[in-house]
Image 1 (cartoon, helix red, strand yellow):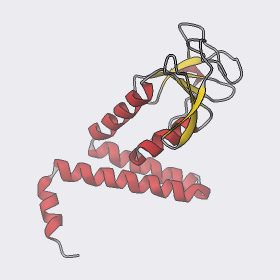
Image 2 (tube, one colour):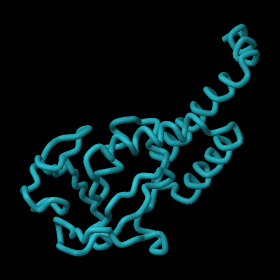
Image 3 (cartoon, rainbow, N blue to C red):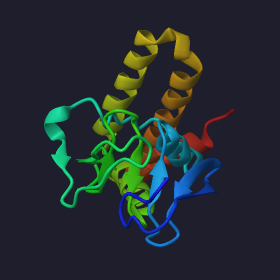
Image 4 (cartoon, one colour):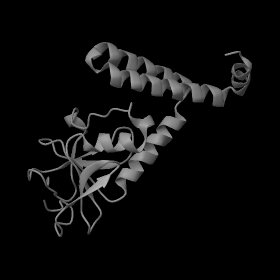
Amino acid sequence: MKCPKCSLEDLNEIKINGVMIDRCSHCGGLWFDKDELSISRDARDKNLSWLDFDLWGDHNKLALSGKSIDCPRDGKHLFKIKYGNTDVMVDICLDCHGVWLDKSELDKIIVQLKDKINSETIPDHINALGQEIAQLLAHPNQADVELRHIAIVMKLLEYRIISQFPKIAELIAVLPD
């Protein structure tokens, strides 16, 4: 496969966060086949795994890439879309569901997602917990994944409460086991 960005190099397989992906040695861009980006992101930071983004669901949010770049997998035109609640614009293929990230965009995504989690309020975490419980009820066949997500959100909520209300942390610390 040729690099969709610089077209100078063939993409080489490398392992990032335990996932084999394709990388351009010239421009540093990364090609993630279907689901590889979320698997890599989750492997890099397990606390991000509950953040689910459907990059292909809302076609109204898609924009044509400034410079025409094509999918290295199937040759179709790639579209730009924001990655979730970040300001990182990624290139996606509507047909094969692959994702192209320019150099260092994966790091930017991880940093912004961590910042999002760290800036959420207690009501935000409670809302997220409700959404995860709804996901569990809607998809009981994925109970192991959804229960793991619920545990992550509950732990984040606990950290938020302890950081905002240190007196509560002191009271909890002296409670008997």
